[in-house]
Amino acid sequence: MDTTTLASLCDLLARAGLLAGTANLDAGTREVPVTGADSDSRFVRPQHVFVCKGAAFKPAYLSSALQKGAVAYLCEESRAAELAAISPQTPAILTTDVRRAMALVAVEAWGHPDRSLDVVGITGTKGKSTTSYILRAILDAAQADAPAQADAPAPAPAPAPAAAIIGSIETFDGIERAESINTTPEACDLWRHVANARDSHLHHLVMEVSSQALKYDRVVGLHLDVAAFLNIGRDHISPLEHPTWEDYFASKLRIFGQARQAVVNLQTDHLEEVLSAAATCQKTVTFSAAGRERGGRTADVWAEDIRAGLGRSEFTVHTPSWTGRVELSMPGTFNVDNALAAIAICELLGIGKDAVSRGLARVSVPGRMELLTSADRKLAGIVDFAHNTMSFGKFGPSVREEFPGYQVISVFGATGDKAVERRNELPAAAAKWSDLLIFTKDDPGFERVEDICAQMVAATPAGTPSEVVPDRQAAVDRAVELALASCKPTVICLLARGTEGFEHENGGLTPSPLDMDMLRSAFARFGVQVG
Image 1 (spheres, rainbow, N blue to C red):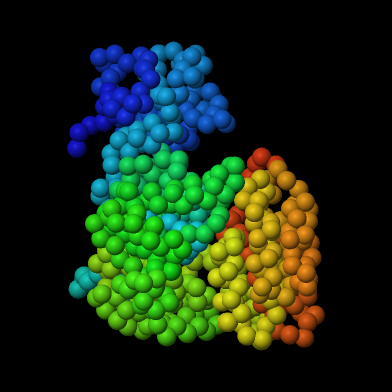
Image 2 (spheres, one colour):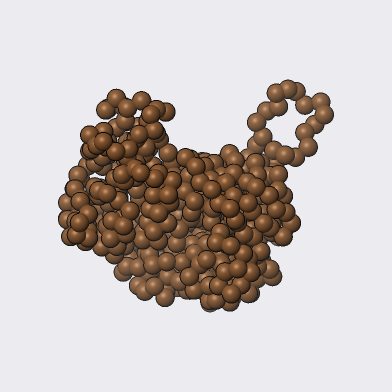
């Protein structure tokens, strides 16, 4: 592989029409090798290029990067004079569009590590995280099924993971493991993770690809072996995200432009537009949880005879290569959709029936349909990330089906500063399957929790009782208190946050207990024995 240099990065930007100029690049410095690019000074290493971007950027970040060994920096031409004053002799690359330039530079600087492993990108309005975890469980099972050495000691050590994962819950790349901030990281961070996965000799990378990542070039240059499109609904429509639904949908469809193969859910809305965009790929595999024939098309992977029990689902799956009965170790019949998406991806990756069955039977997804029950089964709690109209529409009917005869108390809030339509839509959606709504705190941003909750109360349909308890732990406690005072068995649905351990509040990030920890705490506080 040719060595990347400052000169080659400049040539790359020039070809893209993004190079606005350079500083301190002479015959010697032009040939300085580059091995990475960072936009976060905490991750800078020697021989890296540092990207100066964003409204919150401080010149001190550049100073820190240079102290750690950065050999040059990339910035908007409008900031050239300001940053030159920090370090007058440092090579600088100036651009007309720092975000787009960063995406191109990051790919090249990190050496195209996606060429060394299979990368699967998953997009959709709901189900990305669950599908990613199901797929990772299958891939890990496939690696565990690999032939063992005849003289291996017993018991054999636990197999190493086969797949890296990047998404809204966590990021694991073989070297780093951390709770995720963004569903899809900024370009420099993304490519560092891909390089770490390559260097850790992982075989696969499974990642959620958000509409924001596609729109704002975070994944430019990333080669996807498979792109999976789960569904499309109305979400993330706001001045801070997508100005219109059309912009949101168009951003989602961009995923197929960088994929070799595609997986498409035949149950998605706007199916023909999705399939038309996927037609640019070499091969498309379709799936359906609602029978083989869907929307005038025939699914390649489909399910039948779906049966749900407390905490599990089982169904018969048909694929082009095998048919069999499988068990999914998660509640929620809607998760059959996500399981089929993972199975369809496995068809393209060459992963067979045994690994699929083993992975499905052992998967768990933090913050997604996590179940806690009392010993007598009269009280159940479910923690789930359902946070928009589409996910509420799937979640509620499934809960009613799996907990017949139970009253349902739903505890949730709505975010501040963005996705404001949820304040009207979520109460109306939840009222269809809830006996009581308790509105509480969820990422309030610069807004008052009480104001957000008041808007949700106003949007609650007549006849559906509701309460406002601004503190989230107190809201969970209140739900348990009401459940125990009732003569009916009760399921408490704690929604919209899942595993998020921080909240956006007043311009900063505030640590927050996990929803499952809050639920366990409430059970203990009222003396509920866990079954």
